[in-house]
Amino acid sequence: MANDKTNWLFIAESVAIAASFVGAIVAVISEQIIYGLAPLAISLLLNLINRRRVVQQLRRKINDRTQIDNLSRDIQTLRADIAQLKQPDSNQMSREELSAVVSTVEAINEKQKALRGSLAPLQSKLDELNQKFRQRPELEQIETLAGIIVALKQTIDQLPQPDRTAASVNPERVEQLERAIAQIQQELSQLQP
Image: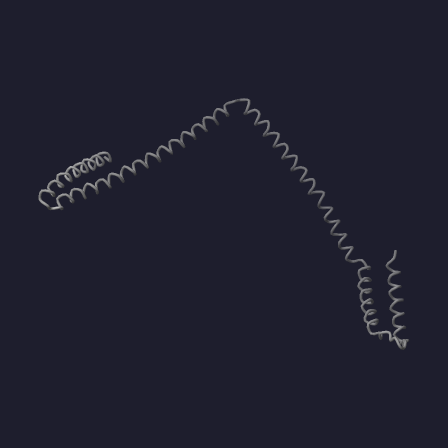
């Protein structure tokens, strides 16, 4: 049916072109340009319609050809795959390789389970050690010493700067310093094992 329509358009275009020639002759004789332009315009319109149809058909054929080529490649690939599957040696070999891979994966899973089992007691031991470390008396002593050091520094800062002309010593402050130093020495001796 599409061919009948295409043939009809082709025949109509040919008739319009012939009418354009006749119209051109009539236009020259009658000096009326309309007789030549009307058939020429119709032939150009039909030519444009025919050209679009031909381009669409060409595109469809190219698209069909591309699809046929793709299908041919797919069929060739399938044939090669089928031929490879039919070979008994390659099937046996891949089954052996598959069973080796499966056994390797199973062995790795077993090792992983064993490692997880041994990791749980280690984690609990680590948690226990962390708890014991936080409860050690040395931490409190370190905090106490830090407080004493701060107090000592404040006391030292309150001491008057030595005067070059006269050396004045405050006996109360010296006594405070001696007590702080004695307390630090006592704390240090308790820290030593």
